[in-house]
Image 1 (tube, rainbow, N blue to C red):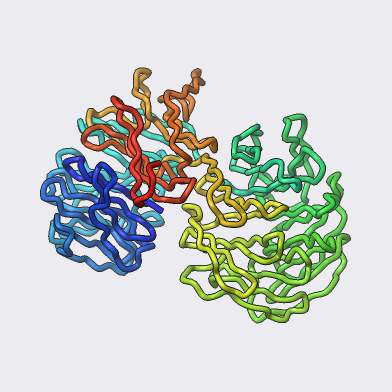
Image 2 (image 1 turned 135 degrees about the vertical axis):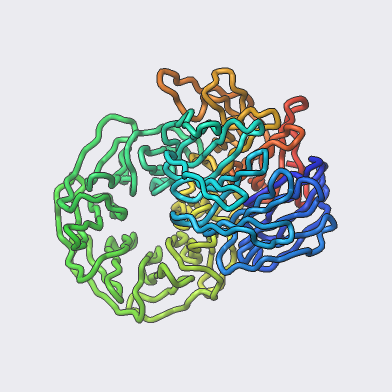
Length: 600
């Protein structure tokens, strides 16, 4: 996984962070010049070149490291909090970094000023003014600005959640990107432009029983995809949780305001079921194998319950659970429901009647029952790994301990021999065998709550996350098959002549507003109007189609080098080699394979 990439001042080399290797320095022709192996490599967040002397600044989980032009260690600043961002000033006199706090440092990492801005989370990006006197940082939910003499300027508001900031080379505009795009005039800090929200985080997904179609749910839309990843239809509807109804063209979805909806994916009709709960959206629902029973977790003024509906929306049963049913799953072999309840697991038949239970010495937060119905896999939000028990409660095994912050989702392979689960906090997906050994660690989603589902024939593993992406992998060797991207911009950058990469209100703005992977194996370079719509204008123009494989995360970092070449780092979908590519407006697309393999 590449989190950051930086061009050297002469544009002949680049440095990027690599999840598995450390910091990689490569020449323009793709030759690896140096790999700097660092401790705690999975927590390397940012890298930046000094504008004149060739030193390299690296932000890691534990602090900031400075390397000489020969890549020898020069200075270290240890921190007790993650260091997410690092950026040299244009004149090379100052370095800004850190995670939850902001520090201005001299090149030897002596701290001149420290700021502790309000807000939540860590600092993601830093942008310097061209005169090196002011800088801006993104810290949710606003952008903060500071001067080099230690003064904090008024915060900038109005973009909901800001991931990235970029300062125009001519010093007249600051660009913000996150759930919206925004532009501020730096002369008076008035807002020049604010788009409508463009983010589409993925909240839910479900494969049809025959694996013919996939539905993924977002805040305001449902995407119906064919199994090659292409979006066949888009239905405007909230979909915090969704599930296909067997043998129909309908999906069930739960959304605001606390209603259960039956949505026809051809757009014919929507049926609304009243759940009878409080005015909150609920995030959990499951449909029985025959499609005749719908189970959903409902809150009614602080009291949680599990309810069963018939397919027509009539309430069948209020399932008697003692405590909050945090998770539940249908047993496809016996048409019964397995439910977490306090420190234990309870079973109910399809009519909602009790059908057995067992206690555990921990509180299971997630549960999935095996395809044969004789084993139960459980996980806890704050304990990493999976525990597998038989249906009487006898523990079969626990997965081999791996570093992590907890497990949030589970999926059992149809052959019953493998379990996939998301590692919360490390953005990984682990696959374990029935001996409890982790056999594969897969690149996950740039978020903490990945969803997973195997196709019924076991040939495909589908994952999605709140980064807005849907991944399809081969269910046997887990090679990428396709990637669907519906997410927000992560890093805007300006070209050397001051034209904004992601578009502005000028109708004559250049191309290259956004890089979108549509699941077809082509990266689209879109014109200014393609990603967001202004009032009265709805043109969507594809300026170029680049045949270059399928990038997993083309939006992580995209920007122009000093010679105006656009960078598209990511993973190559065919062989999962790290590939760095750039687009030269004069000569077309070029690809550099940073793994030593064939060119992308």
